[in-house]
Image (cartoon, rainbow, N blue to C red; front, side):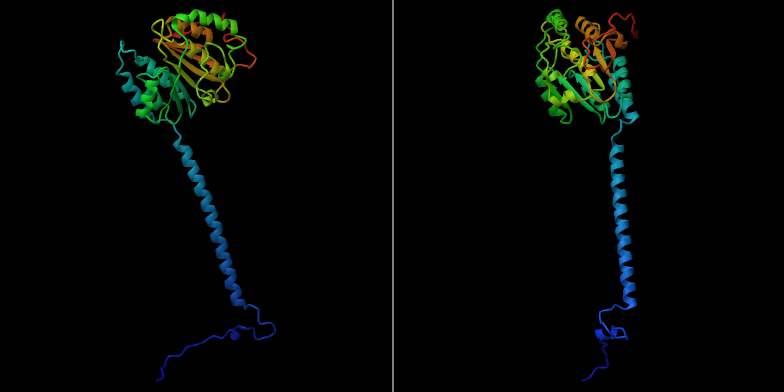
Length: 310
């Protein structure tokens, strides 16, 4: 039975040019389609490449934007609630002291490098206020450090075994004066220091950080056998003068500045001419970098300038 359907079969020979001679030539219509296809492919490839690069730039920009300071309303709220829950007999910082340090942290370059001696009631506040910066805590108690890391895994903290005692204050100052041009000089790598006041057993990378702010609120210093803050103040003075990179000055805060150890060591290693202001029991020093060949912590120790006190 025959069907009425017809099939048209195109034989390759019908596409040959009528002029004969060399059957491999491509007719003009096919060359046009090939050119259109190649142009389409080229445009598509270029568009994809440009789009990918723009997406990468946008992504990089977004990453940079996320590294920002804590939003001001949240920053202010944290300071407000922390400062309204202080008491004069709790050993905590006063409202004025908290607000003063917070104001300096707010002005700090981004990201801010903050080193804190002492795990205290304000520890979580400092870590939060320095949002997106680097905050490191140093404490004498391995127990407190481990508990802090257990409850707050994102916090960086280390314990130090202090070998000093408050009762040894004047012996340590005498040792420093004998070694001020050698082991106890103001510009040095503390990792290799044999000065009795140097803290040299922290992780190596801590000494490479250009610290913007150093807060000394530990270790304990209220009885003769306590380690005292002599080593912390000395170490802060050396870190500020020896730092590489970052700002040329370091803000150093000493809490309970009017106690004998804190006052004497601050005068020796942070210098009265660097004392910007006092707020209640808090001293605020601004210590600049020094030349590697410097051998005096306080070249202008005879300065009669008096700090502004509030």
